[in-house]
Image 1: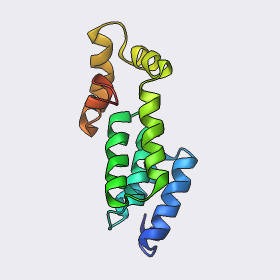
Image 2 (image 1 turned 60 degrees about the vertical axis):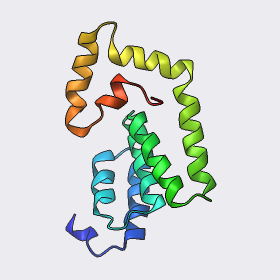
Image 3 (image 1 turned 135 degrees about the horizontal axis):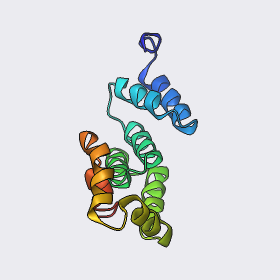
Length: 129
């Protein structure tokens, strides 16, 4: 990551966006973590990364932060709207059922993997709660 120390925050955000698109989520997170300024774009990209991880509740929070930082940005508003539409879809409901399993043991197994990162709420409660 030392090679990235000379990059500006804007360059780091551009690089993080490319990493997210390539699904290199670990590197993308490291890049986002190295950005000093909390901007709408940083929150937006963090939301996109969380969607790739299927952490929809956390993604929703990040999109809301992005909109608060830049209320006029239509891209951020559209991302939140699309996420909320997805969370109400049959596809999401089926995916959630598969992830959680048919009993609490299934939920516990999924949650154990994510508790350290704070994703339990996203998995156990759903993205729109």
